[in-house]
Image (cartoon, rainbow, N blue to C red; front, side, top):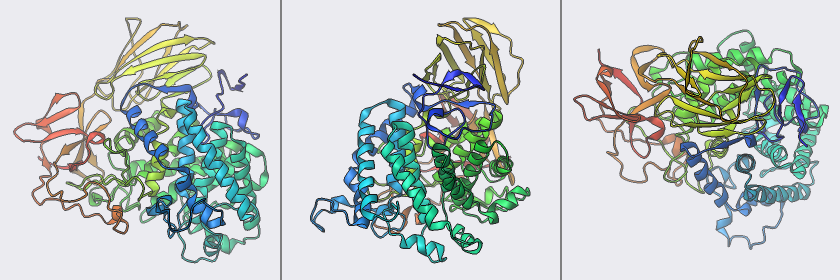
Length: 631
């Protein structure tokens, strides 16, 4: 028997299954410490939403194939090697047991992918209820439990020895050990939240106990040294572990990972982001939002909101992505950073997580405007439709192309987050208040529960969406439809064939109040138009958009002579040193007045052999996003 979410939101039932980044309204039965924050809007669980056929489900299916093709023994190999646990093979004769790239035995980040895959499997199970994902995850968890027991180091578990943690505490040269432990902890907690795997929770608690005993004597100076090294979102994970168990030692650990150097200036309203490593920064704010939700008070929300506004308004490209060579640059300095190493995919993954938290606090539509922009223009196009491989960067350099990973020899951080990105597309389509359902994203899907909806749409080919009430149980009074800021040409709505007058404006929510009946049909249309998105620092440099969708110019494959567009694992950090060999004759000037639509999401430039299509649909060839506008 399912339990009610809370007295503040009595109309919906908790599914008890959701992503490790716990959002208000989810898996109440799993948490001993209830959130004190009363949000403006509540999140649904992944199991409450079924994706219907679309490009999103195609991406997810490719993700499923890849994640299931990686053997459990390969994912456990480095863990077993670290603990001296036998793998069942003779050493040196089974090269196939070893993964390459960032999972190589000589890489200090080894083991992070196993954490991401635990999360990805949990999300796939939550989305599909296919027992194959739970079975594979159970085997991984069982193997990790064996390694933790064999190590016998107070709960420590990793694919690398504690010496890496010691080097971090001493200020030595080491690559992000707490970051890697964060991914593993998050994956284990996901396995508990999605699959109710209590062995995974026991492992995570053991890791938390080890961390507390390891760090409880660390003084302020040593703590400052430790925090200079990238630690991901481990503060968020410890806060969640505290909320699940009520063990205050985990709360203490979450607080310990507050970095004064980077967060106090934000608290004072100062933008100090230029030159900072973006993906080191963003997860710190996600942890602050979780602390704020648990306590219902404090500075965390204000700091996170200032950070979000600063990044989105002053450090973000038209695609919703940010950073150049993984670092923030000077505020608004967009046109000077159109390089081949812009838009790290991990940054977008974490910005979307932060956006979800902040959205639940306020129900401010602009958070979902950004979410939609980054989801469609970056995350959806991060994956190669031919192979399912993942791009580390989204290059803004004219004539560049996406560079994809390899099946078993890359395992970059963005491959890891990609295992999660493609598995959780259902998480932000719908939300709910204590009076009704909120429709935020236009993605073919069904919402299940006391109030069920079916959404049919070919968005973004058109701005039309059809919603059908599948079940009208409970006392639902309202449907709130996001009225996007980009819908400047207005909107139209019909309920059961009858036109409805719209009072609201773009950038808000259209509120439809009535006694809903099963079978009611709501037809919504938000006409889209072409427009330019100028660079903050130069109005003569701009991207072209159709509604929220960034269009890019198809530039062909001239100059492709080898492995393009795939990374070469034989080259050191190929994704980061890639030479795009851009042809010298690439034309970057465009007269936007000459663009004509020739088909669904296809545009041509009059008197010029140039086709513009959604950036998310351009793969394995060169493209241009930002143009010099002809005046």
